[in-house]
Image 1 (tube, rainbow, N blue to C red):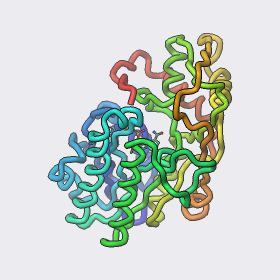
Image 2 (image 1 turned 90 degrees about the vertical axis):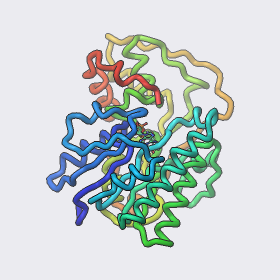
Image 3 (image 1 turned 180 degrees about the vertical axis):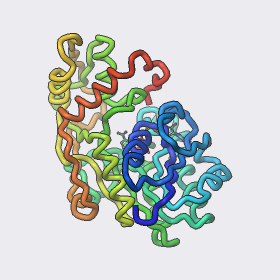
Image 4 (image 1 turned 45 degrees about the vertical axis):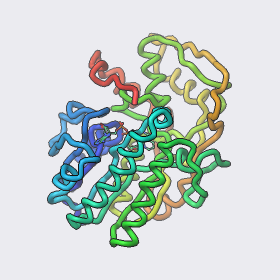
Length: 321
Ligand SMILES: NC(=O)c1ccc[n+]([C@@H]2O[C@H](COP(=O)([O-])OP(=O)(O)OC[C@H]3O[C@@H](n4cnc5c(N)ncnc54)[C@H](O)[C@@H]3O)[C@@H](O)[C@H]2O)c1
């Protein structure tokens, strides 16, 4: 990991953070890892199997963040209020966690001479309603406070890179799915929970709307490649492929089997829902060597196996972020 011996992962107890830790720890050159997480959604118990330093604390607290940076070579910033709909209801909270929290982190990094950061961002929510595929050159037009907060965080990363010599990389994720996502409200997690409970799946519209579903292990490889590259700037990480909700459900039917009958209710489209979106990953392929390999079927298979393996442990993971 070219001179990166210790990494601070903010939000490391969450869905992507816990998968990232699993991936980093499996490397022969595994770095030391410190996690800063306020356990508002992810829990320390969800990363208990890993030998990491853990600090229970909030990215809005400058003193805590400064302490967490001690001895660290790089930061992977995942902590965020990730809920788009709730951000519309409560934009102040979203602003404080995502914008003030990120600014605090960057300021504390500047004070402590830690100048390498990977900042978790988002493609769709920043760009808004655009003709796909979404790419890094498009003019941002966020539709939600969540999207605006991520755009502001990218702006500060860019500024700290230019004004203070940071290596600051914002990686824009598409729709991430995979193991360790039980607490998420995203479509794959929601549908697999419905199937486990033998409840119907609700699809808004005809099911032909598309998204770019990227398997979390591929995404985490992309994050690691971004870290190793040392390149500043913005990179879109997804698969580059559209998948419709109907295709997603067909794949789920193939893996869940006859013990779990699946019934789908189609309801009218919700106002404001973007019909088609996926992303262009040419830049990440070219500059980072990012090369996602997992098919939706293979990724869903691994995700389903993990959901089945929970064996009643679900309640500690109920949150619906
Ligand atoms: N999952 C996706 O599909 C997706 C897509 C685009 C972008 N992202 C971004 O990736 C990052 C990780 O997302 P995730 O899906 O793992 O979400 P998650 O909710 O599972 O994880 C976020 C973690 O941050 C912690 N956290 C929240 N507020 C905090 C605070 N104020 N201080 C410290 N910790 C705090 C939570 O407890 C949680 O463990 C986020 O920045 C999110 O915006 C995710």
